[in-house]
Amino acid sequence: MQATEIIQVTIDDAGLQLNADGSLRHLLTLKGLDKTILIELLDEAQQFISPFGAIPARSRSLEGRTVANLFFEPSTRTRASFDLAAKRLGADVLNLDVNTSSRKKGESILDMIYTLQAMHVDIMVVRDASASVPAHIARNVNDYVSILNAGEADVSHPTQGLLDLLTIRQNKGGFNGLTVAIVGDIAHSRVARSTAHGLNTLGVGELRLVSPAALAPDPDEMPFASLTDNLDDGIRGADVVMALRIQRERMDSLEGIPGMDEYFANYGVSAKRLELAAPDAIVMHPGPMNRGIEIESSLADSSASVITQQVTNGVAVRMAVLERVSKTMAAT
Ligand code: CP
Image (cartoon, rainbow, N blue to C red; front, side):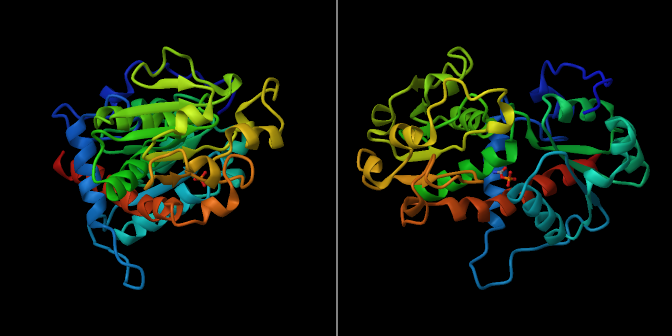
């Protein structure tokens, strides 16, 4: 984001992402997104799951559409899966290398967006380190352009939330009565926020946020979740345990954060710690992982781990989202 650009503060991204008839136009946040739309997206994503060894599910539903991936922050999973998802739906895909784009010459983000819009880009997938950028773009694009949030500062990562929900549903059958523990750097995690809001909307039994005090969220931010700094308390009896990376890139200083050995001893999700969880508990991680810091390496590769299943689901979820907003365009 250029320092001189004025970002309109987003008051209601949940409302902004819908058309007047309630259909999904942009995907900016899971916070406030209707339960029916959430479930429909999970159901649609499930249709795109194929067995390994088979040709991956594909269709021509985005034929003629153009999808641009605009990643102003690093990404492996999200960018690659949006790319594959759009191609498997038959879209033309533009992966813009923002490091060699004219933003480096001082072009504003909106001028860049208007330039792509003039080339008939229909769907823009945006990741940015600054809050409110996806909503800012969504407020300024033409009626026929859709914006998908691919990671917004520490605020929102809605497709990651959706793929987490899909993975939990596939393994646990639903959300009612389920205890989910999210462990680690909650304060700086857009994943924790999106997944937590989605779980809340879908009626999760209990949500626990586990972190050292320096990495805890504001206690009022997610009133539907309990907060603890004790990993044993947080993990005890949990059906789902999700470990999070420490997001150093969002911190000015590491003050108050334990050294890495101490962090793993107190907050690392390990096989030993998992013995406190429900016997069939699953282990999740959005990636990228720092093995040996927030998660024991052997646990990440164990039969309890569904981390690669999350990655697989990422493509299916992004196909579902792309198809959904594309259909809305077709209807307008
Ligand atoms: N989980 C996630 O967003 O990973 P990437 O940063 O690799 O996209």
